[in-house]
Image (cartoon, rainbow, N blue to C red; front, top):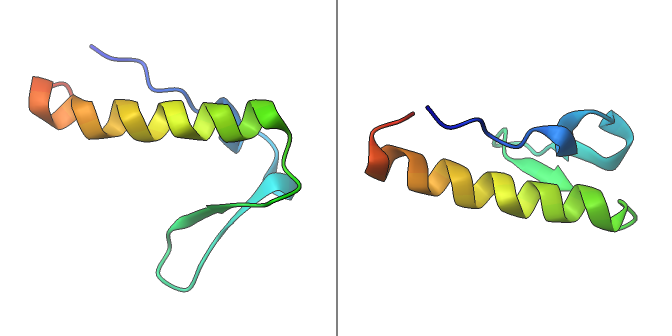
Length: 53
């Protein structure tokens, strides 16, 4: 089972949902938040291919 990286979501000051309920990371978010979200997207994309999500 894959453990997804959700550390980007801990602080709502750095992200929000747009009108289509997509996550938007703010430009002023720390580098760690942006990197965590990129890792999350990669993991979420790969999980269905492996059958783990």
